Image (cartoon, rainbow over all chains, first blue to last red; front, side, top):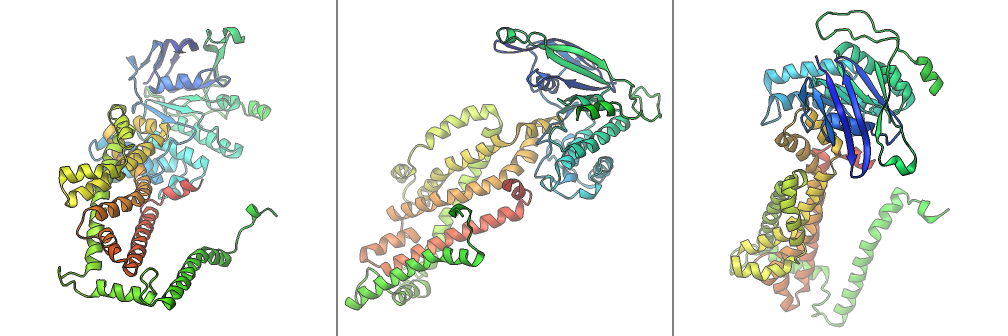
Length: 269
Length: 272
């Protein structure tokens, strides 16, 4: 069970208030999409969840404990770019999380430990459809494949929350649809909790179980600085999507309903 | 069509590329021929035969005083000095460059000092080195290290700082400690850049080597050139200069090849 609670978060840079009074509880197994106009602070919010930035006031709790003020294994991440290591092969990129975990000094595994890690890594590569490419370097992969690799790499470490920062923003529309289907599948299969920042509304509704819209309530130039963005809309996406394995153990084996908002998507594009 | 949009064919490219070399050689040959036909004892522009004769002496005839083959012993001692100096430089650049590029506290400690230190013209340190560590090998090696280390250290530190923030955050979300990030993320990504930095640093390294040997040494390529200068022995100086050029070129070539061979992942990224 993983719950993330944000309590009265404010973020200011000097005189500029970016976010004000964010109160949010993210339940285990939900897929929260953060949307909003550019510059509204949605990436800042994600950076605070990641531990890269600290709120000016308020606190963030992960399973009831204050969040570590630096990035760590309990929060996985996929960025729009530079999410994978260029000097490691596809397999090496997935393995590296396990190697960091199990081998504190050398950062490398050998023998049976390595074999076991490779089995797990291959299962994940299979899940993201990269089985045939495990010996390639990321530079030889397309953008969509790199993002799928980044997902597998993040999932290998079994984070409590997976944070996505516009992960599919740089992809071509066709590829994006393909990765969306995969993302949905991973969320259903792996029972993960996801927070995704996106500027693509159709993507938010397509993948999310809940869409949070951030907005500045006052946008006149003279008052812009003193009013930050806050949660303007909190929409539960209908019909509800379900994960295969509920984390409390009661197995829900039903298939996820067909992806919602195909019509919204059509309307937007 | 504008000239910037026109490209020479492969054959024409090779022709154009060799042209300056041929022009220089021909100019030299004409000048040499003219001077020698006026005065056969002229030493300023020796003919190829004269150079070969002089080099034959140095390469294949044992020196009466030291019992060694001077050309080869000069080469060996110079390469040893160059290698030791560069080795020290590389070690300093790796250790301090990586830590100062990666760890803010080390950066605060190292960066301003190195920036100030790198402004000192290295050659002005040479007298200090001679006084402090003597005229032996140590002073020459130190000069090379002093002359190249700040340069390489800054290149490495910059390379580390250029690693995208996302990648470092990603490593942390995979649970990596600082040590693990240095060994598994930073070092592997910096090694190809270190090779590039080494290739650049070899140019000043040669300058400092030859300078140090010219000023105080009893052996070495630079020493020999400045020794025979007193006798106007262009027939030795020119082949030695060519030899140094060839050595420098071979080193550069080897490093470039090593970089391609060891870091296959580095190339495609560089192109984009």
